[in-house]
Amino acid sequence: MTDFTAFDRRSFVAGSLALGTLAPHIAQATTVPHPASNGWGQPLAVVDPIRVVLVMNLVVTCSAPEAMGPEPRSKDGLRGEFWPIVGGRFEGPGIRGVVIPGGADFPVVRPDGVEVIDAFYRLRTDDGVTIIIHNVGLTYPSADAEWPRFRLTPSFTAPVGKYDWLNRAIFLSTLVETPPEMALASGPGQNDRLIQVFRVD
Image (cartoon, rainbow, N blue to C red):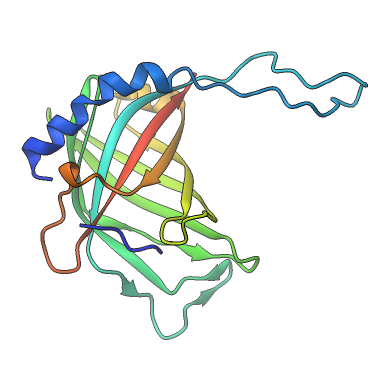
């Protein structure tokens, strides 16, 4: 797993306010028609374009990685280490709160060499609701060897009520380097990652 650089709460809120500025632009993203044939001799065209809307900035703080054990190979590949989750914050329109310590990212390198991210942990909203998040995705090579690209598919389990919209949508997310003004990590070996969560419309 790539190591992440090490925001106080006030600067996180300031950074999160940018969400309202970013979302209208990000929401315009759609699938671009591909010039290949559709199998009937006609160019492919998007009939029902997919749109994504940024719904949450999520900064997760991890401690230093820990070894899985003396035999890191498992049925699905190499699981050499895991990243304990020790805190974090999240915020979006109508939702904000903290990452509950506990849970972890359990990456695995498959036999074909692809690294899979597999993180499972909990969020607690500022009004006291606990939400489970399971974020799974792939690592893609990048021109910048120091920072690969990540594309993930988070799923949420929220109780019936204010936040159960999280149960009724498909989400995608990216995982990028945390801007300095949003950094939370403070202890020895701690590191942050910024996860931007998009709802697929």
